[in-house]
Image (tube, rainbow, N blue to C red; front, side):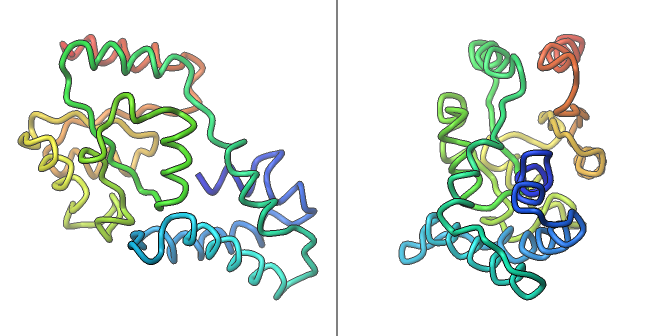
Length: 205
């Protein structure tokens, strides 16, 4: 999500007159810092979110004066959580068919919580079936496939019975190498969820 939030035409970089290169560098650094930090009872997702943007401001101010505030940056986040057209309808259909749905996401606690709330993902995914890199401690690109094994565990299925959908080719390759059927679904597809639905139908799902 950070690429959109920081670099889109109405994101942090253009809004505050920053260069894409400096923002991309800081965004990449902070992603590696926060992608593997799980919340704790003493340090919840809201505190982690504040820590993230405090660090962002600190890093920017090493290079130039920055006028943005912590509260402004946090409030911007929801603007960049944008649903894929038709996806809720597709999820409803899969749910009605009794398909066991799970989330496998390279994500941190605070952006996931905001996505969960704004997109109402709780309608389709129970908390026990959410696998995040910040909780597993490894990304989908890990050679040991920890996230993929975690997903097959939470839905109590073998890898060969799972279907993994992702908008990054590298992640789909990882799933395939782990014995999971993988579907590449570009989130910017002009056909929205209809394209994904047609693929699943051809697979008998």
